[in-house]
Length: 514
Image (cartoon, rainbow, N blue to C red; front, side):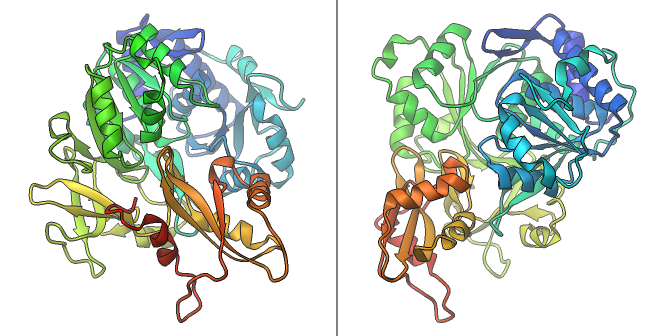
């Protein structure tokens, strides 16, 4: 029986469409044939260096074609990739590398200082375990392009089990530390085959960071169907530039979070751009407000809008089709093909239509569990069904509506932020007696991070001071956008801070709390 392997998707498209453009990044365009040759060279170079199927390799880079070379080379060599959020700072980078048991790190030269600062604390990477591209690394580091030049362009002769993990998708978890979701070749291929957006004629504009599962999936889908993927550079979202790219490259598909759509729709002279090539738009990763949806449908007249619900753990499990956009406002759609969804109450009983419970799903693109965190597996799974803690309800027609989160995770601009990390950091500040970090409504980001603080007795502390302190120790997107100072925080009889009551003050009068 044929195996479902990520590397086979590239082999097939390179054989069928050798001269077709696979990826575009800035001024660089690479064909499927040339892309596969570089992938093969890297895979063989990693094998020659001594890495074997099942070994873990971390990646720290901005969006670029090399990122997909690394992903597909590791797939062909049977190596497991651990992508790192490029916004992370030293301790966060160290955690991912050490927790994932990575024995090598491939990094972009931009991150040379960040990598240098944490080398001595990386537990399993030896002196020769660093590969650098895009500039100069440390003298002892292996140069990426030199490794490719010295390696064979032939397909690596390796037998791989389709159940082997392709990448570990780190996502925020209930402990405040990222959890590593194990995603196999088979799961990713099944997910790619069942998303109906692509063909050989597709030009995909990829805007989200490649360390996100969304971009990894759509990069794989593009290769599987022989599409062309335009990779948007990291480091900022320029709405006008996005519209220029859509017009120039005749983009047909784009997946974005609601904030990105909102920013594009704010361009004053947006009507001068030709976006008629767009056939399909996907909105995911955060709820789409009705006002934004109306503006999308009004401006992008040729495109069909889809919404969906999913996660790194469960893949994409719902789809709201274009014909239902006005009929089912604020719904994330019905169960996607081959997916099953259950809404369960606190006792594990099936909820009736209209009743809110926790959403559990099973899909062809399911993850295999969390890496080295069996306690997280126990919380996530109910038999074969898994949950990421979102609360939802189903209506009489089988459409699902996400209404809140079981846990306190914040989604700001499509980024998952877990407040415990920020709570723990601010609790160390000498001028902070108590702190509770919550998500509050924000017209631009959907939710914004707010710190509610009780100052230590007899001291003066400012909002600017608190935000600056956070920026020294955490990625910028996790830092509070605002700070409120209270005389006291609501507490339970056990002395636990009641975040639900704090959060409720900022969401008062809103039907949906997400």
